Length: 479
Image 1 (cartoon, one colour):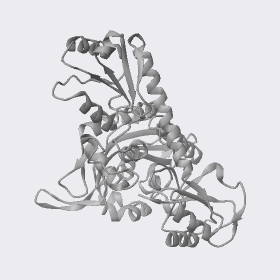
Image 2 (cartoon, helix red, strand yellow):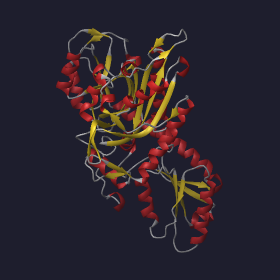
Image 3 (cartoon, helix red, strand yellow):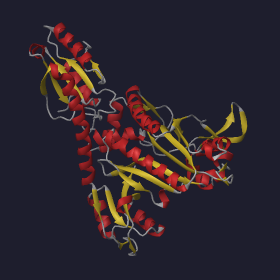
Image 4 (spheres, helix red, strand yellow):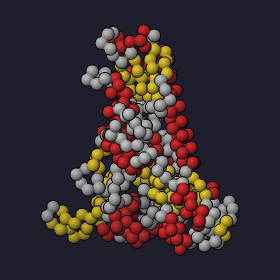
């Protein structure tokens, strides 16, 4: 029987969608806003986002990128300058039509992405090859007119970072796009403990206005893929549309080459699904708002000695994000359940017997069992346990993803794989849109990613038309 603190959480294996929503709400990551399709990110969820933001931002700055901020409102004329861009985003745009009670002469878009406004400014700033490269990022909110929404995964307003860069050559822009993909991979694998497949999107799935789109695709426990981040080589489309020109070393006028890239608060939803269980969240130590919680076990005798030892433990755990919960209004048992719900990686229990034995009890969130340690070893043992949990969370998630990967050599095999074992299905595909359309229509999957080192390894028949091809692609159902 479930404890009171987790009784409202459905089974993850039986009711995955209901489980996800219950965990997000119960753990106070977010709540529904009184505006259709929008959410409120609550303090615990926002602290999680801040931790992710700080670790990503450090990576951006280490590679020479700087932060800026651009307006939320984008003039319609700006938005329409790049034809592919406006066609791709038009169905998702929120439009502002009035200033107070006065109609605007020109509609303003609430940014669904910022290429238009940012490139308009780049056109003012970039005049010489000495001005390049431009390596810029902004942290901001984004608006998309979504019809079906889910907390963190798809909302009408969300938070993200978006990088925008300009370069002197196609090759330099391509290196930037791939470098950012590698940076993202390092972040999601090593900080979020989330395995992904990374590679190229097919033409139909490219970012609107991009020449090439690179992607990271995570696999959730229910067998559906989650796009975890993208990096785009924009070519010269936006530079030409916004008349960004510079004089090169030979005093010849040139258009620069652009990139853009971003990850969003959707990653929080991916974290919940990847690592959570029937008791709530389980957060990777590197980004958890709390890495450890100290819970005094009080019996009415020698309580002050126990509390004093707990305060000492808090001081010893310098450098660890730790909380001492000495609230007398709640029992130790309630606190155990509460901090498991919140996904705190390590619990430190100290009671009268532990004080007598000069020790403490460590309880890892993974359910691997309590362990008694000497108090003198507390900092060392907690640090060690946090590192072990970070690695084991990734290893376990990777094993789950690999168990949800398969291959199909013909259409019947593809249908069988999708029906029997949801997840990624790798197939050979000739690259023709007609074949892609047939696969999508008959399997209700979408093309997710062409893993780069899997291309042109062997020639096999396209599963839709039979034409020999070295191109492979992973299909999956998706959020």
